Length: 385
Ligand SMILES: C[S@@+](CC[C@H](N)C(=O)[O-])C[C@H]1O[C@@H](n2cnc3c(N)ncnc32)[C@H](O)[C@@H]1O
Image (cartoon, rainbow, N blue to C red; front, side, top):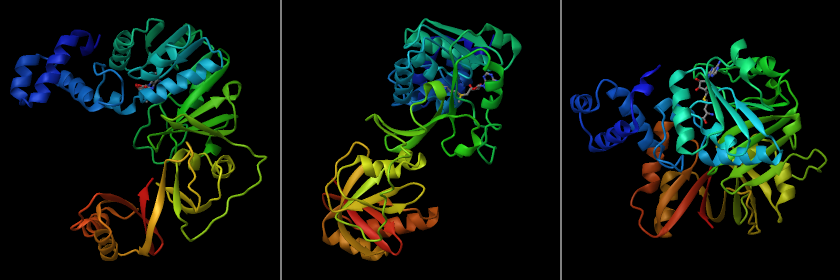
């Protein structure tokens, strides 16, 4: 039994109200009782979760919230699983249960396992909130004989914890390690699905299957590895919430060309497409002439003179000017042209960034909003279409 079995929904609701009112520690303690700290943390997690889930009344602590799958991603992956006709699944590191619950909505039978007694109780309560009742919850080590014996499922899913201290992303560093999960369950199940850190090098994964990179609202969010029977391509990228999907195709001729000169438009390519090495596939998929212009860790841009529209792009911009990359020059231009706001899309060290930003933004006034990109010694000023 853990503290979570001793507290009620009413107490968390009260904690939410008290946190909103900003009460001090002494008052919180007296109104909430012995588990006031834990209740306050659940309340804070609820307040912080805001847009991540469709429900505002879920059970989680701050760590559970940070690791939890975004509902849009959870729903997408569950749908994908259902398309393969999977009827049963075991999530062997379910945390507060978000991915598990969405899988369970699409299969007949599900198992949720977590080593942490608090997390598993959160997951159980969350399943109730979503009115999902086909999950068997197990509090235990998913690598133990006892747990393995209890599981009867076609597919094992794991979204392992990532200890922050692990410097390089490897399978061994994840908890539980997918290598060990595979060894433990390989004789029992047909396929595995592993959530992996998106930065992990694909060569580190010793199995064949599909690497699916998911973008959420324009930033890389998840890498999911599907074992062969559930794979549809070697690599793929999906941009959510739109749901545009791109797959690797080794037979395509390489048509990617680079340029140093921005055209009339910039097309911002989602990180998932870059991480999945699908730039060439993207060039084949969109209609119109474009060339690659910039590839940085946080932004990838193509350019051209056609107003290309595609669900694969994060954003499309029209180029307003190309100037020397100097804050005062940029500021002069923006003021003259009636730009009231400037969004910097540049990678500078923190301190420099703020100094640069202050100079660029000084005295801006007007309706227009500029995006400022750096291309070597030049600044590209653009407006979103
Ligand atoms: C990243 S979280 C899972 C988040 C979850 N997918 C969600 O949507 O909320 C990873 C979980 O793995 C659990 N875990 C780590 N080692 C485990 C093991 N050997 N057996 C079972 N669970 C384990 C941790 O307690 C943690 O809750």
